[in-house]
Length: 295
Ligand code: GUN
Image: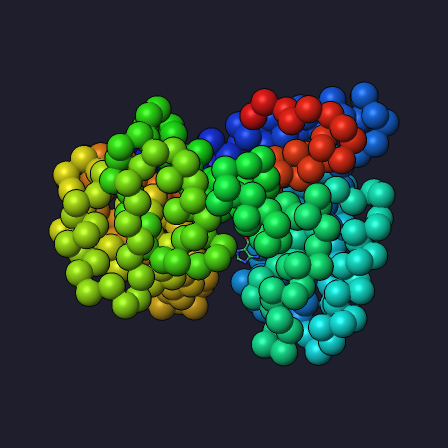
């Protein structure tokens, strides 16, 4: 029997997208310019194509101009860097997002470092990463931002809570650690070499699973009443061959023990895209010398 409250990421994301559209409208009225987001997709990675398409659709709904840049998978690193240079200089564009992963011959650090930090709506430029860890105003990476926003719907005060982050990626796990520390959580990171992941998770008030391992977190890993945020988006083809996604959390067993849980789909995924819009508007306001909007 399910005991946990299901956190509705789709509804929270819709509210954020409405707020984004309001801010975009205000910008247009006050400055006569529309905010613009450029997404750069290199090659034809199937999941990345889906994500980039979803980002373009979200822009249309929030009256943000979308610039959809598609480049061949065999493009050289230097050529890609020069394409990004052009986007950095383009006045119509407030945000530049290079979809990851990049082809293996391209160094993602060099490419992410070539994005103008003021247009870095992913928050992956080393300058913005440093600002995040120092607690300075920055761009907060979209997926971790979405996780924290969902957590705050359950916990008004995160102070002193034990949060366990499963996964240590630059995109999700590491920035989450910085954000949870800033919220005064006690933070433990569990990763592929951790020996007693289940035991550590059982001591957590909050578990955020971002390991990319379908169904890894089971009900007996969870302290009764804990909050569980599932970042996983793992493809799980059905016998009929239809695409389906599952999270890193075994929803059925965990929802019998947890106090609150995000579903997959409909949890963190839609929040990531809404937060990208918010970051684009933040970048647009900052580039026009307008104070950060309250969100
Ligand atoms: N690939 C998976 N997640 C992300 C993300 O948040 N940003 C970018 N740029 N690429 C990704």
